[in-house]
Amino acid sequence: MHTSSAPGAAFLLGEHAVVYGEPALLCAVERRATASVELIERERDLIKAENLDLSGFTASYSHGETDLTGDAGESLSYVTTALDAARNYLDSEQRFRVEVSSDIPIGGGLGSSAAVTVATLHAVFNAVSYKIEREELADLSNGVEVEVQGGNASPSDTYTSTMGGVTYIEPGSGVNEIDAEEIELSIGYDGGDAPTGEMVAMVDRRRKNVPEVQSTIETIGDLVDRGLDAVRSGDIEELGTAMNINQGLLEAIGVGGGSLARMTWAARDAGAVGSKLTGAGGEGCVVAVPDSPEIRSCMSLEGEYAFSSCQAEGVRSE
Ligand code: PMV
Image (tube, protein in one colour):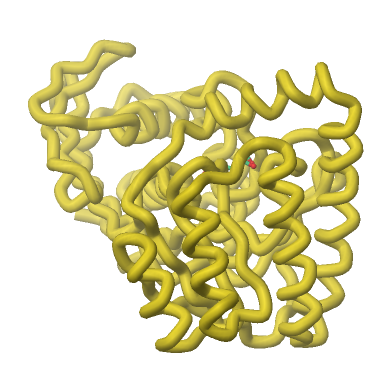
C-alpha cells in the first residue's frame, strides 16, 4: 500500500469573498486525512473509509456507479471523482483499492474534503510511480472539488492542503506560499457541519440582490491584505484585529451562526486577540489567536472540543 496524508486548512481571513475574486489567507492545520492506495486487477475500484468523523463505509466504484455499504456522506464522491481525475490525467484504466481515514471534522470549515482529495491523489500517483509536481496536484485536486461541489470552489483549501504552511490566494493571478512567522491557533469545533455549496449559493443570491453585500465582500478583500502584512511580520495583534472585523463582516453577509458566535466570544473573553469562523460558516469551527489552554477550554465549553495547531506540513508520503 502507498500511504499519503494531507492537512486540513483554516481560513485566517477571506472565505466566501475569495469566490468573487478577492484574496484569502489560510493556514494548514495539524489534523490530517490519510489515504492508502494499491493497484488491483479488477473491474471496479474498492474503497473503504474508517474514522472519517462519520461511521465508516465500504464501496466499489466503476464509471460513475457506486455500490455502497454504510454512510458515506459526501466523502465518497471526492474519492471516486479523484480516482477518475487521476485515470483521466494518466490516460489509464487502472483500478485501485483505497482506504481513507481522517481526524479533520467533516464539513466543519477546515477543508476536510480537500484533504481527503489531495491525500488520495498523492497516494494514487505514488502507487503508479508517477512523479507529479505539487502545483499540478493542487490544480487537479481543485478540479475534483469544483466537480463535486457543482462549480463554485476556490483553490484555497486544496492548495493549502497540498503546500502546507500559510498561503495567500490571489484569484486570477495565482496562489502563493507565504514566509510567515510561527502562528499558533486555538481551534474550536461546535460538532456541526454546513454544506459549503448551499452556503456559497446563499451568499451569491444576497450579493446579487443587495449592493451592500457586494461592497462588504470587497472590504473583506482589503482586510486580507492587512492580515498578509501582519503574518509576514508576526504581528498577532494586527492579525487578530483583522480577524475580528472579518467575523463581523461574515455575520453581515449571513454566514454566522449561534454556536460559532458563542465560541468566538468565549475565545475573546479568555484572552484571544482575534477569533472568527473558518470556511463556509453556519456551523463548524472557530479559529482564534493566540493559542492558549484557557482559550481552548472556554471554546470547548461552548462547543464540542478544541485543539491547538501551528502551520502544518503539506501533503506527504507516510
Ligand atoms: O467550509 P469549507 O472548508 O468547505 O470552505 C469553504 C470556503 C468558501 O470560501 C466558502 C468556498 C470556497 O470554495 O472557497
